Amino acid sequence: MAADDSGVRRDSRPTLRRALARAQPLGLDGAAGPGLERRGVRSGLPLWASWGLPAAPGAVREIHAEYLRAGVDALTA
Picture 1 (tube, one colour):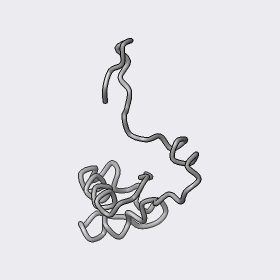
Picture 2 (tube, one colour; picture 1 turned 90 degrees about the vertical axis):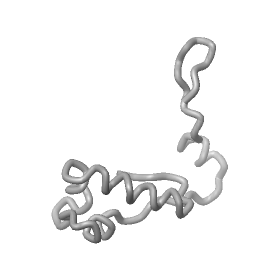
Picture 3 (cartoon, rainbow, N blue to C red; picture 1 turned 180 degrees about the vertical axis):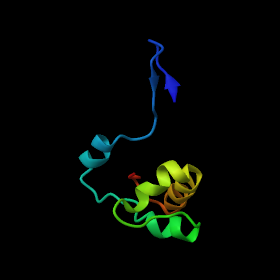
């Protein structure tokens, strides 16, 4: 993040609003549950991948990083 003249920090990443305004398809991330299961983290019903958020936040970050390396435009949680 960079600060402008007012000292307010601005995120330089594109916003969802700007991305949608381009009127081009957006690549979203996919399921996190299988990635969590491969890492030994519980991800069953009823909340699927949400089990991983409190139980294994590092694994969730790894999964999101994999999707970013694959070229997605947006991550969901």
